[in-house]
Each structure stands twice: as structure tokens, then as C-alpha cells.
Length: 417
Image (cartoon, rainbow, N blue to C red; front, side, top):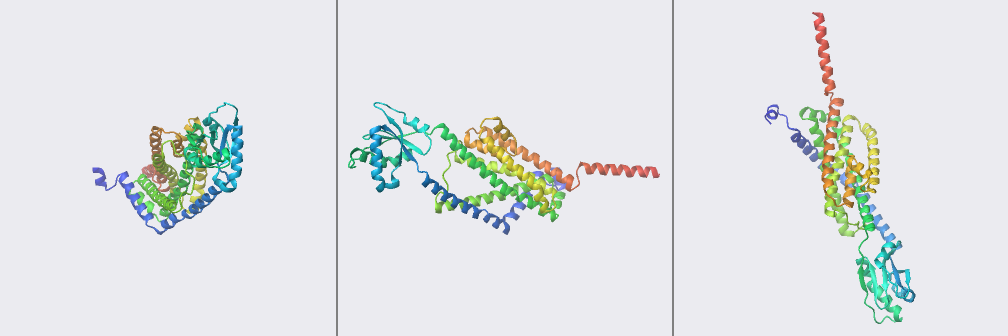
């Protein structure tokens, strides 16, 4: 500390904080940032509305059906009753699918029958017309309770004067369907993380190229350590990105309040929604810092925007391959491919976020976040060293050249004497 006071030079962390605060304030209160916030909102709104329309079309095209497991005479009576009531009730009546005609004194496990069936069969009707039993998801069978009672009464007498009581039997979600649901949530979280990272990480490039053109970066490099400049710019851009995400999330919340849900709700992740959102923020920060450190190194060595675009294209394509690699590894939980995706630093945030949706264990996330933070430090140090040696010409190679030059001059003077 006393050496820092005598030399007037800030520590790495203090200098990084100064750079981060300066860049964050300059970008946040600029006019271009306002238009940057508005840019993604329009395609998101259009996509949300299109998704809502598509979901309604799909829902109307694929109505869930009610499977029937009863004696043959009861099934025939139910089908005839539905045909009589269809012109009046219409879509209020569930579609009936005959699963099995039971013989005399034959019984069947309706929960297993429901789990084994495919297609649009969402619940199973069993028992008899006097005492029907509905088996299926609790919300669905509650909604179908009145329709089934009306169908059974119509099938019994043709004059629905006395509606029988329908017993409800909630079926637990099978392990296979739970895994499929969590896989859908994992894929959605992974895709959102990739889109946000690729859309926002490019700001690091343009910021550094602009400051190189204005010679600001050289002034900063002469005043504070280059590592501090890189860290400060990275975390400033991360803060700006989080402000943008918070703004877009608020706009989505207002749209939800005004319009209602635009997309079908995703299944519950293994760690729960609050923890998945928190891990999503952390893994976004890690993915942004990892990719941003590479972009920062590229931007520090480029002199024009065209050169930046040329250099960043291979990195973008490689990041797309990394996303596909993490998506493929997600389908093989516990396998060698998933372990490789979790260890490779650039795919680790995507693989770990997908794992959070499928596995409730938390300790692997603590280790993964520490591993990713270590690689952020390594990549920033490498980028800062490349900038010093390639751009500022102040690396070890330059010092060796100067020493060799001094020795050569000394030798020439000695020969002259």
C-alpha cells in the first residue's frame, strides 16, 4: 500500500473499478443505448404474438381426448350418448377413444393404462355408468367431471335427469414424462442464454475499437495496469447488459399483465424456478465474461471496424458450435459428453444451466462457477499480455530488443576507442 501511495499508481482492483464506473456511466446515459434497448423489443413482441396465435391454433387442432376402459355395453352407450349431445354441447364434451373393452369381472390398472398410451389421450374413464371413475391429471379431470357425469346420465336412460357422482383419481406424473418436461425447460433456458450472450457480447468489440481510434486506450494503459483496463471494460459491459436484460424483462412483465400468458408454461425445473433464474443470471455473467474476454482481445488487436468483423466471425461460428455441443451433451446426462461440456470453459455455462433444470444437486454448480471464474482471469491476463506485446510494444520481446540494442551500441563504442 505504501508503494502505491508513493508512486501514485492504483491497485489492479481499484483501477478496474475506475474504468468500469467510467464506461458504465458513459454508455448508460448515451442516446445510442436508448435505441439499443428499443431494438430487440419489436421482434420479441412480434414473435410473442405469433407464438400466441400458433399456440391457439395448435390447441384447437389437437384437443385432448378421453380414453374409455369399460364393459362393451357401457362403451356403446357412451358413444351413442355423445353423438346425441354433440350438436348441443359441441366442444364442451371430450372426445372419446376406446382403449379396452373389458370382459365379465375383468379389471385393469387405469394409471398404468394412461401411462402406456400415446397420442392425445389425456385421461382414462373406467368403472361403470352408475359409478364412473376418471383417472388423469388433477386439473383436467376436475374440468371434465361435469361433462362425464352428463354423458353417463345420458347413456343410462337417454333422459339426463339424475347425474351420477364422478369419482376423481389423480395420477402421479410418470418419471419419463417428468424427464421430458425438464428437458424442454433445459433446452429453453440454454437457448435463451445463448441468444442473450451472442446479442450483447458484441458491444465489447465496438467500444474498444472506438477508444483505440481516439488514443484513449493508450492513455489508460500508461496510467493503470492493462489487466485493470480489460477487467474494468468487461464488467462495465456486463453491467450495461444486465440493465438491458432487466429492461426487457420489465417490458415482458407489462405485456404479460396486459395480455396474459403468451407462451405455454414450461415444466418445473429440478432446482425450482427461483434458483434456476438465479443460476441463469450467474451463468449469463460467466458466459458473457468468457466470450467478452475473447472479443476484448480481438478488439485490442484490430484497428478498424471491418477488421473487427473479419476477426470476430470465426469466434462467432465457433461459439455456435459450442452451443450445439452443449445442446447435444444435455441429452446424455451423466455421460462422458456432458462431463466434457461442463469442463470446457466456453460450453460450461450452457451445460451447467441445462443440468440445473434436470438435476437438483447444487454442489456441482459451486465448482463450475469457480472453474469458469478462473478461466475468465486466465483469458483476461492473456488478452492484456497480447495487447502489451502486439499493440503497445512493451512486452518482454521489446525489452530484449532494447537490451540487445544497448549492447550493440556499447560494443561499437568500445571498438571506436
